[in-house]
Amino acid sequence: MTPKRKVGRILIVAGSDSGGGAGIQADIKTVTMLGGHAMTAITAITAQNTLGVQTVHPVPTDMVVAQMRSCIDDIGVDAVKIGMIGSAATAHAVADVLEGLDVPIVFDPVMVATSGSVLADADTIAAFGRLIALATVIAPNLPELAALGGEDAVRATGAALLVKGGHGVGELIEDRLIAADGVETRWSSPRIDTPHTHGTGCTLASAIAEGLGRGLALRAAIDRARLFVRMALHEAPGLGGGHGPMGHQEVRLDCNLGGATLNQITLPATDHAASFAFYRALGLMPIVDSEGRYARFESAGGTTLSIETAEEIGGRPVVFLECGDLDRAVLAARAAGITVDDPVDQSWGWREARLFDPAGNALCLYTAGENRRFPPWRLRCPD
Image (cartoon, helix red, strand yellow):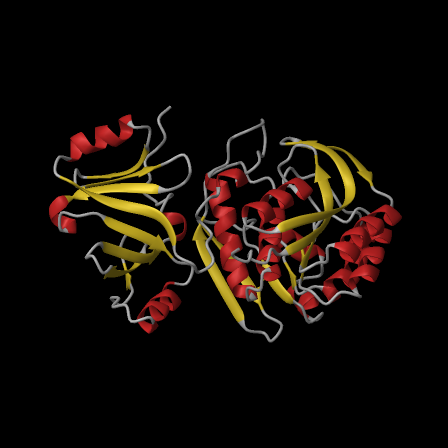
């Protein structure tokens, strides 16, 4: 039998969200969709929905510790994600347990919910110091960073700091990672116009933890986690009357880790209108339609299929294999004796390297991120 891939064991210490948008529920969905195994130590039970948090019931500290020990002592842990803590006593008890582990720790210092509800009192925030000192990376948003004393205060602990820019202003969101050695990495992405942002911080931190748990470097884990969050925001189902949940369940074939993923095929079209109508009638949803020469469709499973003027693609299909690291994939192919063109950045936001198989079939190794399914010119869904 083929040996199974090692699954990252991610221990999540956080509160429960009865509405399913944030907290433990978002954490489990994120880790599961990314291929890890989620384990939980629930610190608080909340009654909440998209409009706010109605009631919070902290779980007794000894029960939180018992949940952690139960997972650690039997299943083991590859990474830890910490979210809502519940009380100062629990913060200290969690730190006591984590001091005995040598695994990556991602700390999302949850203080205020997306709705504005306060989830950590002053004593609990003061106790965060021990958790920050143990963390591999701390991921506060801008208000949380201010509550922790600012950038210099957090950096003085020696942990890496990921400053999330979602609470900033402007059309671009900038996230900054300041590594323990002071090296800074910045990510800038267009703001996604949606009110359904409940659980973004929980989701990002859990996605980073899953990446670290499977052995990714921190920057690579953040790259993948940001893409997961953005795809889930695009896929938000629009539930509830306030800040609704994201669409974790719809993020498929979008966050691969380096192995080639077959998720896009382009077919030649001699009559654009006829081909467009044909594939739409088969149940595929059009997401791009460009001047009668190109169109892209999305399937229910997340794969995409395009039609393009036959003359532009030599009259034959092109199979697209998405790679998490295109340059590495090209080098590996060449090392195996395969002739591959150099990667080229395309104006439509993809990076591509073309090649042919032994039978002469056209292939393309590429990376596109969210632009495969959600390019800036994506068609609006019909009402």
